[in-house]
Structures are given as C-alpha cells and as structure tokens.
Image 1 (cartoon, rainbow, N blue to C red):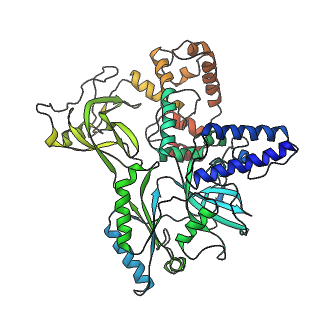
Image 2 (cartoon, helix red, strand yellow):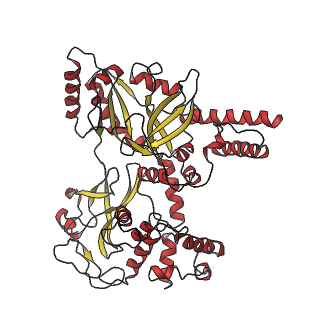
Image 3 (tube, rainbow, N blue to C red):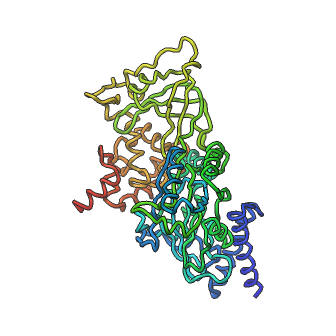
Length: 532
C-alpha cells in the first residue's frame, strides 16, 4: 500500500506543479526534478498494472500508437472567425455600430486581450474531465486531435473545483513559446535539417502530427479565452468568465484588461504594439470584445463573425540593419533568387540574418546595394524582406547590384524567358538543383524519409551517389555509413526510412516529384479523380 500512497502523492504533486507553472506563471521546480517525478510515477504505474490509472494521471497525456487520420467532429457552438481591422479608426466605427445596435443610452464596456499568434482549438469537458479537443476547421466542423492536445501540459486533464456541469467547453489558442522555437531549430540545425520559419508554423504542423509522442516533444502551450456551457454555470460578463477559467485551472493570458471606453482600448493597443517584442510568445494583434454577455446576445453574429468582437492586427514588425552581401541561391526548378545577407538583428522574436530580395527587377526598383542600411520587415507567415533602403545612410561609392550571368552552382549561362522576372539555370544536372529536388522529395510533407536531413542530401550528391530520385532507392548502408558524421546506426535508420517511404500514400509521391504547379493539395485532388 506504500506504493499506492506514493502514486497518489506523485499525481497530486505533478498536477500542482503544472497548475503553478501554466496558470499562475510560477516555476516551483526545475525541469530535471519534474522529469524525475514523472519517471517515478511511470515506473510505479507499470509495476502495479492491477491498479487502474485515473483519467487525470499526468502519465495519461501521452499514450497509444500513431493514428492514421483524425476524425471530424461537429462543434457544439460554431467557431466563428473575427472581423479584422488594421486601422485604429476602425475601433471608433466598431464602437459606433455597437452603440447604434444597443441604443445610445447603453453602458458599454470592452475587454481587450492579446491576440496570440497560434491555432484556435476547443476543449470539451464532461463531469470535469477533458474528453475531446478539436481544431477550428471550417468553423462548423473540425479535426478531433484529442491525443495531441492531451500532451500539452498547460491543458488540465481535470478541471478544478466542485459543482461542475455535465458538459462545458473551453476555447483558446495553442502556441509555441519562443524559447521552445529556438530549442527546436537549434536541434534541427545540428542535424543539418531545414530550419522552421516561425513559431506559428511549427505549432500548426505539430498539431497535425499523428504521433502524440512526437507532439509532446515539441512542448506546445495554450492560453484560453472563451467559456461555454449552461447559463447557470457562466458568469454575466466575459471579464468574469476569464477569471472563472483561471479558478477552474485553465491558463488565461494575464494581460487582459477591462476598458471603460474606446480610448482605453486604443491606449491598450498602442501599449502592446510597442511592448510585444518583450513577451515570450508571438502576438499579432489585440482582440476587443463587448464585456456584457447579454449585450453580446443582443448584438448577435453575422454569417462569419460576431458583431460584438473585433481583432486589430498589428503592423508588420520592422528593424534596421546593414546588407553585408547579396548571394544568389538556386531552387529545385532552376530559379535563381537573390538573398540579402544581413548583420543579424532581432525581429518579431527571432534572429534574422537573411532576407529575400525576390528578383533582379525588385533590386533595381528599390536600388538595393551591398553596404546599404535597410529596413527589414517580418510579419506573420511572411519571410523576412527588405522594404526600404535608407538612402541617407548609404556609404559613398557603393556600386549598383548587377544580375549574375552564370549559375552560382554549375556556372551554366543563366536564361530569362519571355516576360518572366526570374533568372533560371537551364542545366537540370546542376548540383544545387539536384540537392533541392532531393531535399523536396524526402521532406516530411512529401515521402517523409526519416534521417534524411539537408547535410546528408548534400553529401550524397557531392559524392555522386545520388543524381536522381531512383538513386535513393539503390542506396545501401555502406554508401551512407562512409560519409562524414554518419555511422552504421545512422545509416541503418536512413535505409529504414527509405523502405518506409514505399508505403506512403500516392498523393505524397505525386507531391514529392515536384511537378510545376502541383502542390500537396493539387496532388490530393488528382488522386481523388484518377484513383491510381
């Protein structure tokens, strides 16, 4: 019975530490100590299979085998999107519309919240236990990703408190903290894999992974912003419902603010547009909601969005830096693209050292030169780009940028067809094109060959072992084991990944071939139409 008592003690401890860290923002123990407690609990549960493991045991966050697909579920309440605003004047118009619908004599308060740059999800609780989690999808139907959401330690497996209704729903945003984003990219860089572009893309891709154990390794988090359930369970205002969710053990972003008028809203927006870079996660704006739930009901919804809420999207973040060099990179189709190599600068929570220059026409239009001081912009999913040259800071005697005449990889003369703005290398055997084609072929979204990072692709092409897709399937362990930084175990893993790729669905193979204008969605449609 000593073991049973210790198991109960460990479950309470771990759940308490999760609540303390994700809801209260207080770290009571180190990751090492936390992991040791979890290992001890796992060992005890394994030692005593005769004792049922409760649903809210921390060990139940990750279990089972990878799923083949995610079932679709219907949302009990539609998950509407918000009307977007990019101008502060839109807030005044929004306020006028609200007051016009409610009557000029109505007292209207607003709640302003940070707009987390993540993925909207809904969490269904039954008898206080987390039962189902789903993506927004099309607003009416979403993917049931419960196994993946159970891995997120910020999400309580059991709500706190007594007197909970039979069912209630919590909505929020799943996101990847910037620190985790940096950790994941550092590990990918070590393995020679392509770096992720931004935290939101990683979070979105992670929620689609069909192996909960891999999802758990990404350490996603969540902030909750909406509570749904019986009227007797809900408070009378959105502000109080945010407080209630905190009491129930849900992580709510601490920076929400009750605004008495539209000027309070504008002050809040301006403050966070300035201070957003100091947060440990990405935000892309502010969400403003009418506070009173009865007023929300009166205002109602349009077909797409609620009339009682609006989202203000921040302008893309900009930073000043210097162009060290302009390099030209070759893509898998032969397109040769200019890239600005920059003095590293922090922008939108990430370290930026490169920016796209698109093409030579764009360089000429903006008169971009090596040595120029420029403004670099990065917003949302957008790759960093040079938006403006600060001419007053240009050093004297800097020559204009000229387009290369030869491919930087194989030195074949470049061509430009018709009205195309892009320069192209016509040599299909160009080493860089081969590398990029193979890299695309083995990518996770294509044939998903485990262990095939960019460093290995480059080494195989350089050694002449891989010149086309078919060569990949002729590789033997000894071909790989002899390469730099590759041993027998790594080689065996790569060969296993190649074998596993033969079982990938047809649409992934079509996508992997890199046919112009045939992306993954078009590949799916082709398979639906032609079957084989």
